Image 1 (cartoon, rainbow, N blue to C red):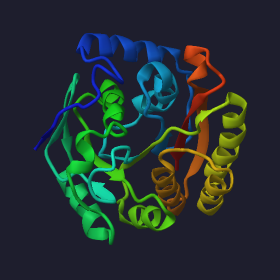
Image 2: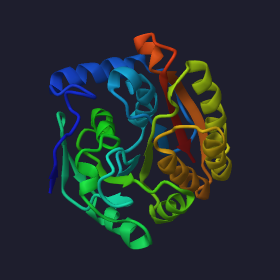
Image 3: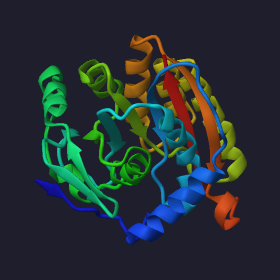
Length: 266
């Protein structure tokens, strides 16, 4: 089963050479950071690379010192297609940089261990939140890793806990999410600072409560909550790497989308 790119030429370059050049620039622009421990997860944005790519590169740059391994990428459902908790079953995902194999065994473990997840392809065909992460990983690890794409349409705490309990050890868990959408920059920063503080404290209940109380709009709050629960169970620490918004690129700070990258490590 082959999943062809849906947003190449739109969210990121279709031409492989141009994509590599852009990734090189993004990685060069990302700060040199280091964490004391093994990286087990991250929150990364999924907008067009010109907007959120630098923030995402702050996380992926850290992976240069990590051994390639199966990566479970969990994103929100923007299309409304498919089942509430959708795991891509098998095959390969194509990007301009080549093919990424799906870890069929780990995908099966997740579905078998979950009471809510199921195998499904429909949710993934036009969804961008997983796809845009793959060229970053290919840029760091080539073709020496496998992936398990997961799409969450059900994003409440029950779904988050169910998935967190089903993802096995010794994978890299990526939650794909942007933060505030289409708000003034100062409003987004104030709101998202509170959300990020809850994430760094590994406090899922506070994070989800703040999303509701503040009317916050992180599109992947379910994937974030699931990652936090999974990481906390493994005794992880978390660190914010970078924060930005779309106004930093287009100059419009009256209505921005916020982006953050956060690393989890043990």
